View 1: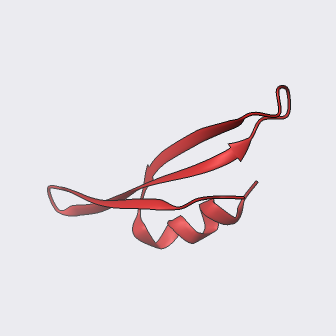
View 2 (view 1 turned 90 degrees about the horizontal axis):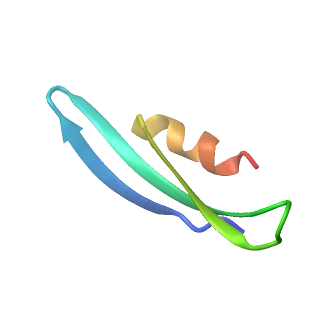
View 3 (view 1 turned 180 degrees about the vertical axis):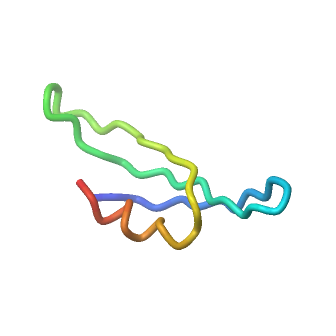
Length: 50
């Protein structure tokens, strides 16, 4: 159950995207948020990983 929140960031000549996904913790069973800043074309690959 990943929830996608994407914001576009521009730094100089590079265009970056900040993606946040919700992941269930193996230890506690609670949900934690994982965020990463990457190129826009890599977001869908990152979201599909567990």
